[in-house]
Image 1 (cartoon, rainbow over the protein chains, first blue to last red):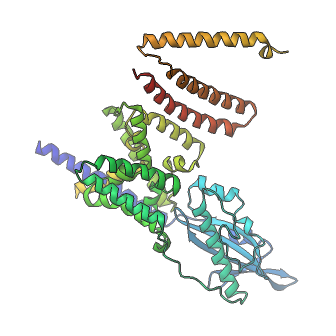
Image 2 (image 1 turned 135 degrees about the vertical axis):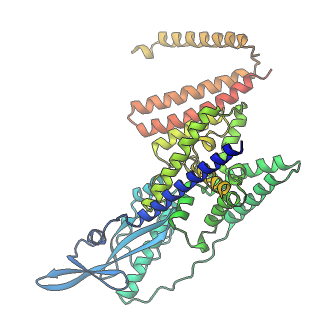
Image 3 (image 1 turned 90 degrees about the vertical axis):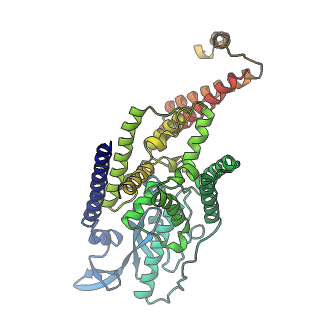
Length: 386
Length: 94
């Protein structure tokens, strides 16, 4: 008996070592992945320029060689701002009068279906003709894009930074008073904290009202985290942490609260409190299985195969994020699709299947496919083995 | 006048509707389901919803609106499945 346990312990240790080693190798490999060259970007942003000069401040001056003389055509600056999953890098080309000649996305790591909304709305090309002193404020001089506010904010912010830097350092304009980013702590953060406290509190006590608190929190999470703020936790949050795309805390307190709610309980005591207490998609499945009234579990043999699939898919998603430095490169999460009604065709089909299955089986998404559950399983394996 | 616009088509349609309702009633009796008066409108509304969903998908495909057909099909299927389970549980109430 003791020998068998020892063998299991050894194989578990070997498994977590292999997974951990592969993740480290993936992270290191990501350092050598080649991204698009600056020369191509500069040429596309300011096509009239024949050659570019680079200053110390990462602002490129474009020259047009006419009859042996070199005339300045304009300037290009490349700046980044944090979006939903990571940095969004924008190149902005200005002519000598400070008017935007062209703007394009150099690199972005947002979820494909969400970022497509920004591009389909004409951004950042829509910035053409704007003045370098404009504020790029969404809802003011930049039209909002429904369902992709965070990504559009990043695009606008990066363009504003590029314009502002060129205006000050090349055109000699007065610097626009830079405001220190205000601490963004409002209703979304307060509601998230209340849900976390109530959800975690209800799971740890034996009060008679526990059941009602649990359902209240689950309903609250569907309404607020899901449909109102449209920001449930996903593997993209974990990938962003691993890749190193940590947003500024001042205006991303919600992000950090969510990350802490996901990871801290499982790291500290091995419990997946987020899943059982405040996950809005888990709550949706709970409601559906109660509507169905059968509460069947997936048969053991089938569940084992599905678990292997779940963990393999999660591993592939994390590895791709690390190697290509793109947290949302492999994203098959359907919870965001459910709450935002934005996604690829196959995500809608998968979502429909999961919702219909949820009527008859207890949490099919959580038990069979959710990548977060696979990450939690790995952390628990790590805790057991150490 | 085509067949689908003629009176005979609607006569056959009505015949099928009557046969379907009688067949449903016999099936419900066999299953031990007591079809109280309030259960009939519930079933009729659900069948209408299902028919409209299928009709929406078929019409959209016919019009070449594949996106509408896809989204209508997905949303229709999920809503029909969830409401179908609710209707089934209501039917089983004695």
